[in-house]
Image (cartoon, rainbow, N blue to C red):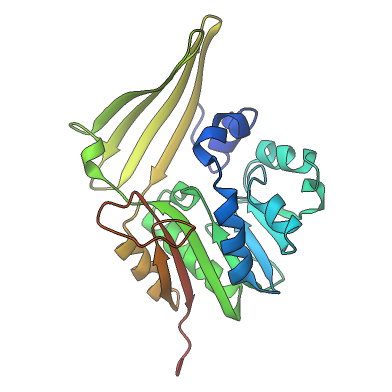
Length: 250
């Protein structure tokens, strides 16, 4: 495989992304879009890793002026091919450090996409870039999993995620607990061959994300277990976190 870069995941999975994750997302939009629309208010929104527009298109249809950033031309091509997708501006590039000539009431990133930044420095840089692009009342919202080291046995994991009559999906992962990295492959096995979809991430715990926010001049405003604002507990598998600018005297 060529060197893994910012666009690798999207370029490899773009043609099956919406179909593959349809069941995972389920009725997610019913809670996600109202949550984001509420905190965007009458301001503009920027999605980091906009992908195929799963969130951006319905959010725009709900009346929010949305634009995005993405490194994968294949994913953005899928977005712009959809009804309403061609009207959403996209800046092509890596969102670890970006400059856009606009300030936003909301910057958001969903479905663990933030963890696609593979070093702590890059993740801190992203927080700082976000802070530079927020209006005074702006916020940064993130959906991410809560790390669980027990998922791996001796630094590895192999699991079947789907078994059908003519198709099997398998996830194979290696885990580096010191670097907080996972290197994974999603394998789709059929009679006509095997397709490989590589995924590399650098995960972070909620407390570490809060420290990144502080380094960027932000503070935690709210944190939930899901978009429906259910309470976060010790057994929650993901979190929705919202940070705001830490203005003196506020």
